[in-house]
Length: 315
Image 1 (spheres, rainbow, N blue to C red):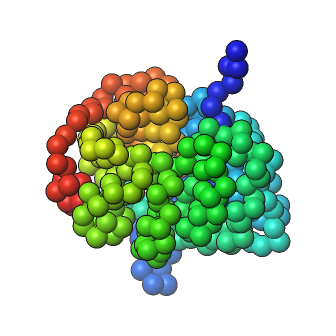
Image 2 (cartoon, rainbow, N blue to C red):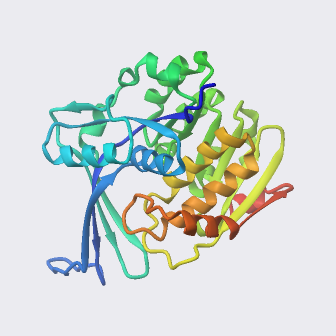
């Protein structure tokens, strides 16, 4: 019997994250001291991959990154987490970089430079890896790349999830053209409102198995193809420190739990608990604590709801 854990293929960004903790935002020409500075791997696909490994599944990361020696240590950290980095492309370009400024109350400012991430290509995902995958997660990448990957992967019967992020506002029509071949679509409230033009039920006309709408501290909704709706919430057991990457941990545990249990409600419960746990961590990566996660899971509630449209998109 094959006892290998399911394989996720995460396609997206690989960044160097520099996180600064400050008491206030400086005015023009003013300097403030950071109480703490952390340098870590980042990028949605990277955060997702690390969370998948903490869940206990296998994962291969597909990304485009720099030949700059600064990236060498980042890749070593990923391998130390058990992530397969064999298919990461290295190019003669500056690395993707994100500066995260976190205030005492947990609010944050992000400054992003995409760099080598811009050179990601559908051809960076080889067919043999698609054939091995149980799920392909595409995150924060433009729909033209997603369309090409999906057209190849869907013929193999592999599950596909997509978290378009900022690209909803840039390429709305293109995303609507391709989501028929997406199994799981992750959106936040603003993205859901933009993509559906305020009528979330219209997205159910597409051939999507599940639409997940994340509302941060307000929990999350799941709309199942066929008309079954779930709502869940998981309040962090400790004070939130940094919400960066919470959506990536959410997606990782959602997909992993769905692969294991084939139960949408259970997948949502695991996702909410992981997202809440991530907010207690200083970097964009989930800081794993099995006991705390189990407590968070017990503090997570899921219910089946009716006609949730007015609740999903409200502030």
